[in-house]
Image (cartoon, one colour):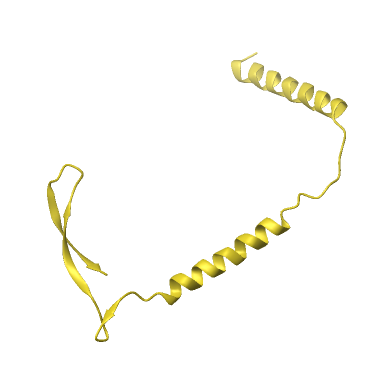
Length: 87
């Protein structure tokens, strides 16, 4: 027998033994999970937060958004470049 055949036989035996033990020691219990309220609350919360983010357009000055170029530095304080930041 090759190594692959021995390993397959061992895995099949382990699977059969595990299935036998699991089927004889546990009883089936039918009960609901109770996820209804959690999922509903998550959807309502996401809708509220999403609408609040969508309603916030940022600050506008005389009809235009205020944007500026801001210098960027890495974690060591080295200058990387500039990025446009709208605030």
